[in-house]
Amino acid sequence: VVIYKDTLIAEKYAKGFDKDTEILGWSMNKSVVNALIGILVKEGKMNLEQDHLFAHWTAKRSAITLNDMLQMQSGLDFKEDYTTKSDATEMLFMSGKAVEVASRPALEVAPGTKWYYSSATSNALMGLVRKQFENDEDYLKFPHERLFQKIGMHSMVLEIDESGNYIGSSFGYATPRDWAKFGLLYLNEGNWYGEQIVDTSWVQFSRQAAEQSKGLYGGHFWHNHDHAKFKDVPTDLFYCSGFQGQYVYILPSNDLIVVRMGLNEGEAYDANGFLKKVIEAVDN
Image 1 (cartoon, rainbow, N blue to C red):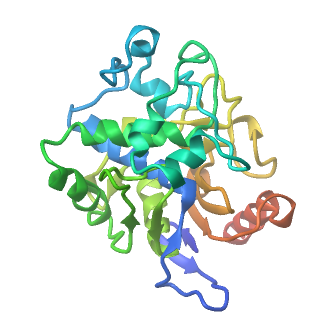
Image 2: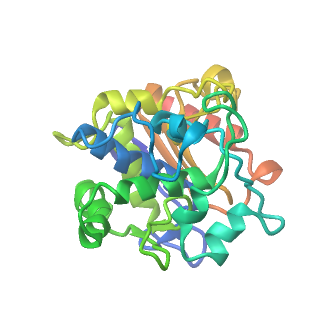
Image 3: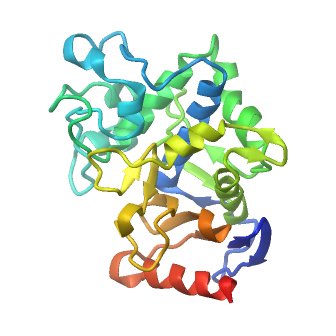
């Protein structure tokens, strides 16, 4: 799906898929977590500098801030490994208490000193989101009423675990067009046709690279600072990424959103070449 200057200009689907097919975004959902927290920050219910995030995070873990979590620099010793039984596989596939598993690890290094991509971080953040509501009904309605319905992302389905926690790291489904709407919200700096869903300052924060990430990541979005990932794509690119090759590319300098949902990645999918050709097509 390609959106140029707020207009849908191209889309193409494989056999068996169409504009109404809801597709798993995997870790693209981490950027949805960013939006939900951005809404709460806008309301003054959360802030980037807050610490003592969980009651059981005592001693050194109490110093971890919301900013550290969003930038994947918490310092927690969580193993993101899907080739064997690990913290990640236990959290996603073996436990009904994702937040409990996600917030369990001890510190490996001091907060803010190491970047490590961790799905536990996103699920722990959803646990913090849940704490902002007096009851589960309000928590469960929150993403739909305050984000999805606002931007017309009506197909979006977020799964919960047995404890009622949204699995913000991984399990969200939407049509490619609706994923594009999410990207469009951030392209337009948090504004949806006159309504400010998240503050412009929040989008600016989301576009800043974490200090230890070498320009690759920050605020639950991936980045291309200093061409860290794509050599032929503008450095202001920021994007959502799912592990099987799902992407929402946001290109402010080109006024462009590109959504690619697929099962090929690495050498089988030349993301740099693909984006380069799309940019050349709209520029010409």
